[in-house]
Amino acid sequence: MPKTVFYPVLNMGLGHASRSLPLIRELLLRGWKVLIGSNGRALSFLRGEVPQAEFVETPSYAIRYSKRGWFAIKLFLQMPRVFGKVWEERRFIKKLVKSRPIDLIISDQCYGMYHRGIPSYFISHQIVFEVPRQVQWLKAILARMNAYYHYRFKEVWIPDLADPSGERGVLSGELSRAGDPARYRFIGLLSSVVRREVARDIDLFVTVSGPEPQRTLLEELIMGQIRNISGQKVVVLGKPESSEAVVDEPGLKVYSHLSRDKMQDILNRSRMVVSRSGYSTLMELVELGIPALFIPTPGQTEQEYLGELLREKGWYFSVHQKDFDLVADLEQARQFPGFIEDNPTAGTLERLFQRVPELR
Image (cartoon, rainbow, N blue to C red):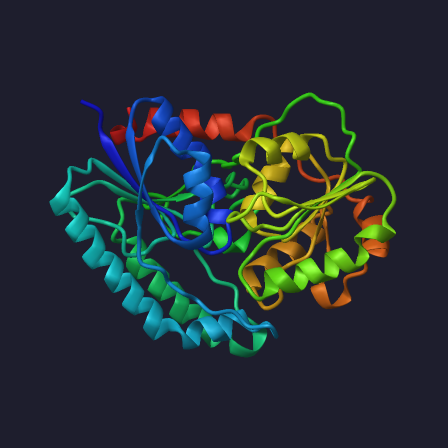
């Protein structure tokens, strides 16, 4: 009889859902029954990508974002509600386990989705939260909160390559600094797209993503400047509730959303990408070996940190949204080569299924 894995995924943009997709597909391929739990756009996205899985709507963290940034402060002020949502997750998982057999839990950033009687694993590249310089005292508080929940899981899987020290990730840097190698494991990269040898006939691919209202603000910036760029251009607006073509004119196609298969095709054909500096997007670009221009979500300190780190390492160009000038920034971005790693996701999956006892 097939075993069942419950796979809850955080709904915060589409990054958590897309990075979990290759592992979900591999579980299905190997004969597991997969029950996916999520909500909002992440749930819509996963329903479309793996319809053969089962789905259940889980509690939403309902984190609110600000047009003016300062995400870390806004998040801290919302912590009482976040803790309440984690408690809702705890009630949810207890009820779920009573209603059906669950053999394994793999939680992508859902803090309350663990069970003492079931092997439970947690996926996160953000072991340490970056905060603005003005409120560095928050860092220790958030680190203790993170550690408290991490130790409820059997292991924390960090989707990154370990640097030579083994203490942090190559791509995530200080975000993934972990002090307990028995608890935190660098598993390698997870990308929902794979590299194909095809002609690169799209000059610019722009993907608009992230939580509202910043997703809409970036969309407005992109659409106000995209026609200033010559060549073949494709824009995806990150609205999985629709898949219609918004604009279809010579040299420019704009879609509300694309399936992973179509997204993979267009990414492989692209010479340059413009996107948020989300970690899941970064892993996809590494998988494909494509240069990029990053625009961190304002006030989302993780993305701002990654943008600065990647620029300092000379891999990708990054610009603040308030300073965004598509023509000028693309000229800069073309001087950065990107980061290339051969077939990283395939290696990650093979190692996981060999090493983790419950997956063998």
